[in-house]
Image 1 (cartoon, rainbow, N blue to C red):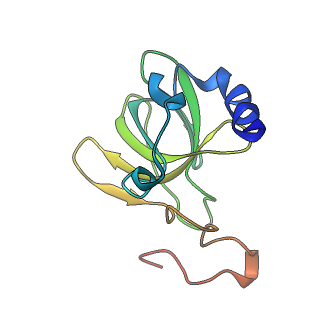
Image 2 (cartoon, rainbow, N blue to C red):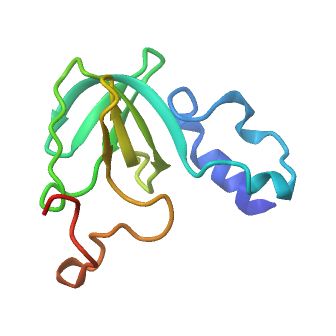
Length: 131
C-alpha cells in the first residue's frame, strides 16, 4: 500500500498531461489483463531535437523520448499532430512505444514490455526495421 501512495505522490506534477482523473480508482485484478499497457496522449509537437520532442495537448506539455537516434532516427516537425503510446519514465518524460502521425503512419519505437531493443549497447538484440 505504501508503494502505491509513494508512486502517486511522485507523479502528481504530471497529472494534467499524462494521467486521467480515474488514475486512483480501485481496479479488480482480473481487469488488469484487459487494460492495455501504457498510456496514450495526443497533441502538437512544439519542438523536436533528435528523437526527443515536446508534445503539447493544450492542458500542458511533456517531453517525449523516442529512443536513441542511432537506433532509429525519427523526423517530426513543430506543428505536427501526433498520438503517442508509451509509459512515464524515471525522469518524468514519456518513453514512447509508438508514434502515430495524423496521416495514420505508425512509427514503432519499442515493445510495451521488457527492456528496449537497444539496451545493452553493442550486445543489443536485432536491429530496427529497415536496417
